[in-house]
Length: 24
Image (tube, rainbow, N blue to C red; front, side, top):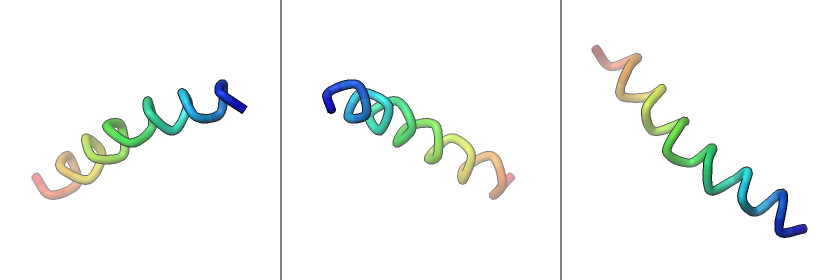
């Protein structure tokens, strides 16, 4: 379960980066 949690922790900033990238 902790493995999936770490995945979400890595994905959150990744999605944020993707969103900011699309705004440009």
